[in-house]
Image (cartoon, rainbow, N blue to C red; front, side, top):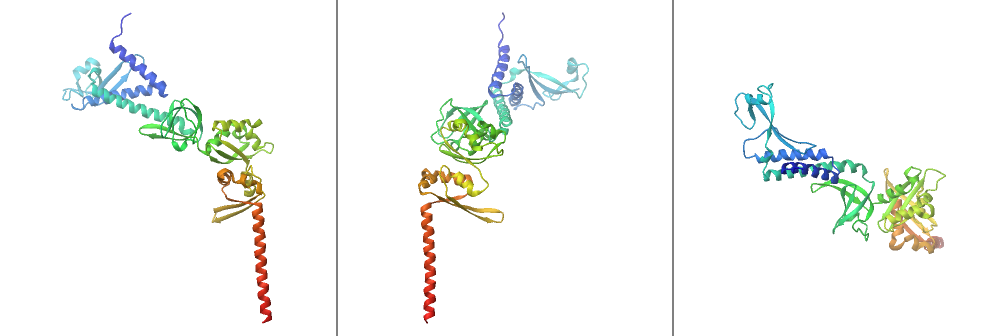
Length: 390
């Protein structure tokens, strides 16, 4: 079997490289071949930039053999004045007897004329085209997935970011999107929320999050069919990533228990979500349009005696939403939560500033108010008697 010459091997290598690159980057092969053709044109123009300009240069790569054709369009003239851009009628008729003055013909250019510097320029142009094609692909694929869940595999990490492989694209999990103390070891498979797609340092960049409250909501949508089909609605989520979340749910079907659907049989559904979030605890509460009842629910697992709400408005907007919550003395610590977490999450969930008081303190306050009232009444009576004696 005859050996292939270097030119044949080079042509085949071009096609092989294109196929490998297209598969790795998820880019259409023709798009990459178009980029290579554009790069060759740029290279040729750079090679001849010191000489008289050559117009209408083109390049084609045979999609089957990999053979490269570089050509220029030249004008047919009676007498040649610009050898780079013109051809005589006599010479042109040897190519096509029907040709006439003023027509244009393609004239092949020797590819070997491309020097090392031109090849470098071609490589740069090709790289730019590949970046553009990859950015367009990523924009097309992920722009519709903003605020949606995606699965990915951790590739590596540095002091600021974790780099994740998602669907043939590399995404970034910035520090603010990372859960404190979560281990992002190499090859770990995780779920992320897609925040945005943008260009960064000339490359397409997909930004992810593990800390967004929206991630909790989307995980419930994946896990709970009743949420996906609209029978149960998540009305609000408050979250301290890696520690605890509160999720307020509402059933649109009187025959479906919203909390029960989210918890699942033997707690399996909510447990799967907690496992995905590295053990983050999740409280599921019933949403209620009555602020007092909703606040009572939001403070679970603590039991509430009474809720007094006060809403200050300015025009059509709420300026302040305040709630005083009375709880049994034994429930006070539970209502507040460790380091104030339970009441803090309840406040975020409901949108109210919550002040929690013990039942005994409230009774003492009420008693003191009564005493203060009687003191005022007694004082008024004494004043009246003195006035009468005079």
